[in-house]
Each structure stands twice: as structure tokens, then as C-alpha cells.
Length: 256
Ligand SMILES: O=C[C@H](O)COP(=O)(O)O
Image 1: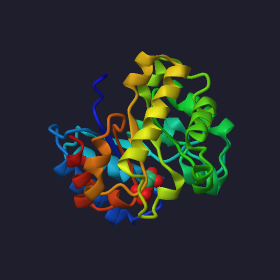
Image 2: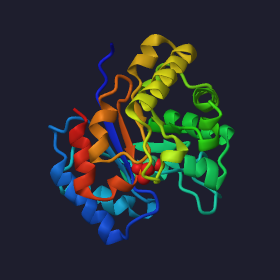
Image 3: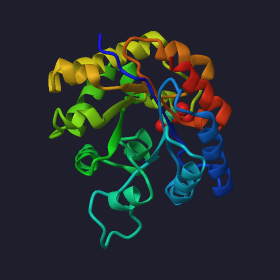
Image 4: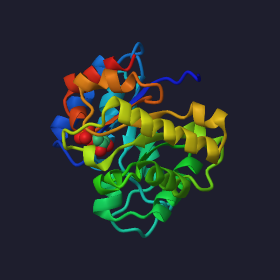
């Protein structure tokens, strides 16, 4: 079996004020060191990225990658309200989230736009954490694997095998996000295994075996170890529990 370094990401969503966000980043920078058992990224709100980038630098951070929760696909220009990949790079961002269920189902992003975002971000040399996952009614209808497969087929269309080295897939069952309900480790593993099989059919076994597949949805220190202990669960994408340094560190430390 391929050996994949585990990867824990913190998606801060639209939370915290500036002082809280910078303090959390500084706190994490002192706690996450080169000996961290996994790769780590944090994705703060846009308006705090620059300050957090500076704070991480001042704290001597070498381990935590800075991520953005979204971006626009065009180069700089007349796109009122949007943020370009160049702007993100300029403030030290090297990771972007795409396809998050809140952007799919609350903001209304389509598979076509998500595919464009994946292609543009990869062309720009960003690492992409590409989120997929089924809604509750789809799960109850037995469609989990088909929904995940469709979201991958659309979202990763045109992505090359070489570019897949910069893609992390985050499986986030929508019904588990922010609800306190977590997929059982067995159910999550089943979905992750099917995701890897679909990646094999889209690319190759070699490519699929190298892709980290994070689980997201109410992951916390108390369930992280068992979830990440499954063969195809290579880390987590964390929402609520990423907002407190101790909880986030508990998850990082469970990624052995
Ligand atoms: O991006 C993170 C996920 O949506 C998980 O959020 P959560 O840990 O609050 O359930």
C-alpha cells in the first residue's frame, strides 16, 4: 500500500475577528513544529490572510501552509468583489479550497465553475483541496458513491496525472458538516475506498494511491484517531474544531 503523509487542514470559514484570527495563527505556529506528524494548512477568511501570513513568518513558521477558502478564476481586472490567484500568492497563500459544500449549496457554485477553479489553481501552481460529498437525501437513497464519482469526474476533468500531485480530495458528507454527526469510521472508509477506486479509473492506480483523501464533517480530537486510522483516510478538513488551538492540535496529534 502506498505510504501517504497525513494532512490536516483547518477551514476557519467566516469566523473570528482579526485579533482572534491572528492570535490563533500565532498560537498554532508555536505548537506545530517540524516534528508535526502530518502536513498542516489553515484557511482563514480573506481579509486576515495578509496579517496571518506576517504573523506566521514572525513566529518562524515553516510547517503551516496558508490557504484561501476561495478565489476567482480570472487574472487581475474588472471583477468587483473578487480575489485573484495572483493576489493570494502575493500574500503567501499556497493552498486553495474548491468545491466546498457551502459554496456548492449555499452560494450556488456549479460543477463547471468548480472544474474551472481546479484547472486555474493548478495551472497557477497552487495546491488544491477539492471538496466533494453527498447530501443526506442522496445518502439515504444509496447514492453516496455515485455523487462522489460524478463530482470528481466533473471537477477533475482536464487535470493531468502530474497535476494530481497537487490535489487533495476532501470527502465531506454534507449532513455531517457542523452538525456534530460524524460518519462512522467504517462508513467513511467505505466512501474513501470508492473515491480512490474512482480516481484509479480516471487516472491510474499509481496516481490514485498517491492522492491524500481527507475526511471532513464534525471531526474532533475524540474521533480523529479512529477516522484517520482507516486505510484510505489520509487526514481531515476541519471546520469548528479548527477554531480552537487545543482542539486543532488534538486532531493533528491524532494523525500518526
Ligand atoms: O471544511 C470543513 C468542513 O466543512 C467541516 O466542518 P466541521 O468540522 O465544522 O463539521
